[in-house]
Image 1 (cartoon, one colour):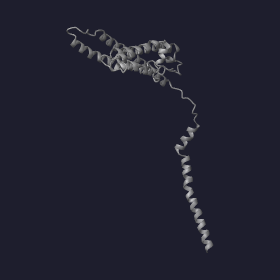
Image 2 (cartoon, rainbow, N blue to C red; image 1 turned 90 degrees about the vertical axis):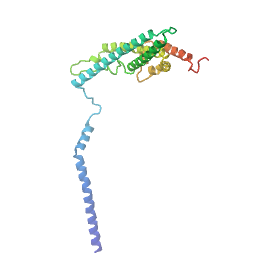
Image 3 (cartoon, rainbow, N blue to C red; image 1 turned 180 degrees about the vertical axis):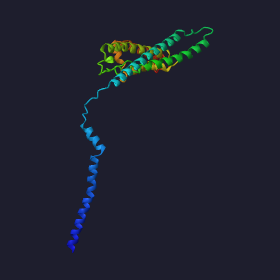
Image 4 (cartoon, rainbow, N blue to C red; image 1 turned 135 degrees about the vertical axis):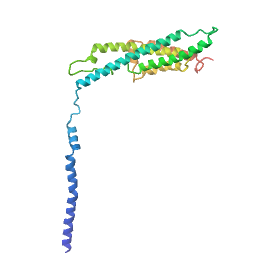
Length: 242
């Protein structure tokens, strides 16, 4: 009797183990036949180095986007010229001190000049920080269906690069002039005229490249030297003479 009971208990334990193993095998079969499993097997068979060719519609959208961006860059440049001309005209009509009626006009002029200085600085900085006509925006945009490559044309890219090489240094020079000449009404602009070097050297915008290509770094350094000399003459400078 004891041996029969022992054999019966062993058979029962074996059957229990088989029943417990059955659900796991079934779950493996279900997982293998599930849509997720099919997706994983399909993904593993794809070549990660295979490039997807753009469609005609995608190429047209890319060209349209580049054209719109270029248009806004030109409009931004015209806004800069308009703002600078208004600022320069206001500076040229600065009232002469010492006249009998100079007190009130000088106050009005200072308020107007301050407003124009802030507005012009904002416009000029916006252009300098916008990657104006950079190669990232005007990268080659191939139309593989028609064989055209309008934005990747070497002659066109050369023209855009020439335009950028002229505009970027000119805008930096004008921004420095605005900051230096307006520090009488906005004292902090004197420090900004020196800190402008940080913007030129910033790797994010790489404005220094245009100065190197056009050999205008000496002129820029001369302007920074002017700001440094003006800073030495201010009473707030620790190096100013007493």
